[in-house]
Image (cartoon, rainbow, N blue to C red; front, side):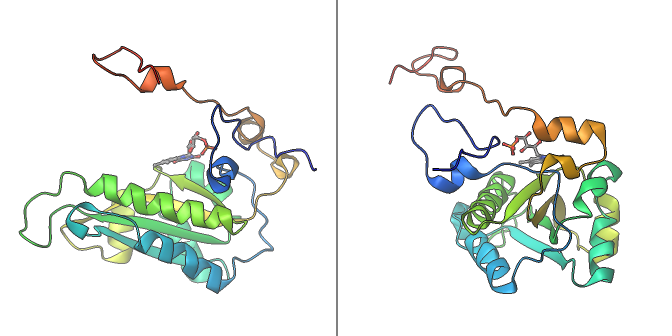
Length: 204
Ligand SMILES: Cc1cc2nc3c(=O)[nH]c(=O)nc-3n(C[C@H](O)[C@H](O)[C@H](O)COP(=O)(O)O)c2cc1C
């Protein structure tokens, strides 16, 4: 059996395969395109996420590397630090959140939560298909709004890069390369699952 990828999770408890295999690469193969039918599956996975009152407060703006002009336009909405590596990806997208309920115009307190669920679905579907994904908060919000004519009531939230990871050796920048080779870490369950009183780890 081949050795597991060093970036795959080392879980304390068994996980579904795509959850264990997902990580956020910085090196992408610019010569490989995500096939359109697989991209559609990723977006379909987002579409079927749960959401409060089934509001589905998410929209995706998307650009494929194969359409160079569209890709450059979306790339230009990322902060410089993210452009540096995301320019090698096959697909870029922006997520856009609708803050108020369509049903009554009142604020949807959990809209960002729901878009996170949709993005989570998308990324796990991608991973299951052998596509790597990297989400980003580092976007130029004003530029994204202006570039795409995002209307009032909607707000750009994050970006997602999809593609095929390369070995860390493919990265020139020393800082990015050290991030790429750093071990992954997580808080322990006892730090984030409490019972009875805040700060008391749940005994499971
Ligand atoms: C909402 C969100 C925003 C993020 N923003 C950025 C970003 O702007 N730039 C970046 O390089 N990584 C970004 N990341 C990636 C995180 O740094 C990464 O998920 C985290 O370090 C855990 O690593 P892993 O995804 O490999 O498990 C973001 C991730 C998420 C979910």
